[in-house]
Length: 119
Length: 140
Ligand SMILES: Nc1ncnc2c1ncn2[C@@H]1O[C@H](COP(=O)(O)OP(=O)(O)OP(=O)(O)O)[C@@H](O)[C@H]1O
Ligand SMILES: [Mg+2]
Image (cartoon, rainbow over all chains, first blue to last red; front, side, top):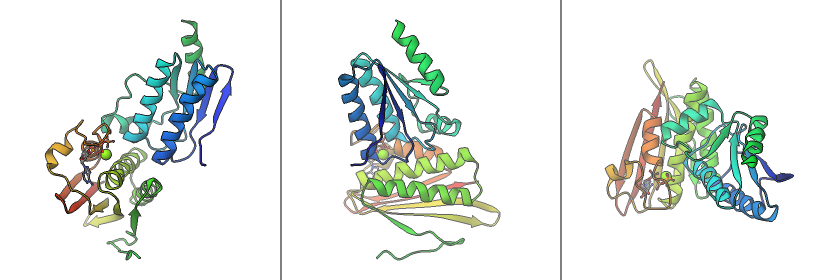
């Protein structure tokens, strides 16, 4: 079964989305992440979408759902690498990704997760 | 077999939309055509995103159908023209469907209204019980 791999680094889960995801693949990723947060007792989830050249309302909603679900499970989600053209389009589409923490790149995202783990 | 159709620049092949992977294919076709028409990266991204929203609606709400994406040129204007067609339940109230936040499914209700903002023209032709045809154009 086609899957987006999830990498575990200590108490952080790292996902690098590199393919143009069809909807079922995005849903599967949400399911897999939710399961892994509990199993791995993760405190942070970092989703790198720098390779994604489009985020529509479905993928946007999936990202929002990951953030909301992880919060309930006492983990923080950071999305990093959003391309400027994608950000502009998301806003015009009407998706503000409110409640989702973002960072410029993986390094900044990791810093944000470390800081979040301190409080 | 669906019959290939050509437009003024050729190559508006029909893409059948029957599953999630077909929506990805519509996105890829929209990207190719938008790039061929000479749009900037941001404009290409907007066109591809709208294509994704409309193709998903064809699949999820229309029960499947087809899409055609092509480059159009009228005089000095160039653009990308996309047609989405299904023979599903149709849209009872088009104005309501275009409103942000309106959904009959579990979505966010952003697809139609958002697509209209991302494009230059969005014409919805829908007959309840018969189906929906959407013609969408982004001019340069
Ligand atoms: N091809 C179609 N056939 C029938 N109904 C449609 C079609 N496209 C849209 N609609 C109707 O219009 C509503 C609004 O569509 P829109 O794309 O804006 O939101 P959504 O698909 O419900 O959610 P989202 O796109 O944000 O995930 C839909 O819920 C549906 O009732
Ligand atoms: Mg929709």
